[in-house]
Length: 414
Ligand SMILES: *Cc1c(COP(=O)(O)O)cnc(C)c1O
Figure (cartoon, rainbow, N blue to C red):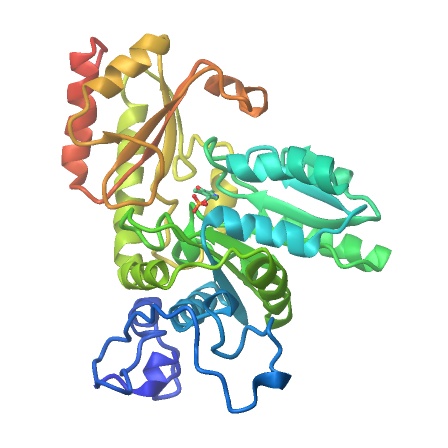
């Protein structure tokens, strides 16, 4: 029987437990009532109050009170994710975007300045480029964070947050987390302000890269993607210090209301037990497919940080967390054709599905046309339209055959 020590990720012989063991056992335990070796889903909205409830803090997140204040399935998942990210604490919310907006609204006040990557998830872009400046008086600068000097140049005395997404969705640009964290923290020391570095690590997951080990203050993941891995539940996490996690719980969870449902927390917890196995397969398959695409004459470009041709390949290699880490499952590529040619190719695929999202078991492809609202921020090779391919867990050979077959059927040279 797995001991309570292991369920809390503690060693039984003085040596640390591995990522795979932690992914399975952390946050699990024996159900006290039934003896079940899996913890149940607790679907109640409210919990029994003590004899005299009058001195309860109704905004508290550390007692079972009301489900928006926090609930058992959320806490089990938080315990696991904090440990996998290497943080003191973690807050699990309703979606990746809820985790992003929680970070921005908790740590930015009117008059503060934030810097963010020129390629980020679209909602982060809209929040930082438009909604927070226009509605809440927050100053922001959009910079190409793949060159740390651009971050240094954009820092101001009132800069409170630098938010980077690496690899960036959908251009796969990589930013140097350690170089940025070092220069931002040095700036903070000089100006006597605390400037935080947050990293959207969704494409990497902590199996490939652990931003907190590289000096970041906050790591954000869309759990909807690899950590759940099964394409059936939305969630997001912010991993950071206990003090900051509690600020997020108060502001974003209890008062803005971005709580995850118990069922989704349970699903994500279940999905996450196979994270290391899945990520190793995503890494290997995406690298093989990226190399294969590079060898095809009608493929105009391939962007994948694992390729030596990627402009930030060396930085990507330097950030890997473990000897068997890789570069994730997402790549971008374009064909030497027009708008219709790209769509014709997708229509001939049989295994790969045309749908948004990524990090699922099944492979997903999306054609991002020439009229994306952020087109002007993308490198020139992306301007003629491109695909984001999220390589799934099917047999690599079947995926390569599907791509080659669809190219031939759509009239391209293979
Ligand atoms: C999908 C995604 C998000 C948003 O996550 P949701 O769970 O869909 O809200 C944020 N960042 C990145 C990099 C993503 O791919």
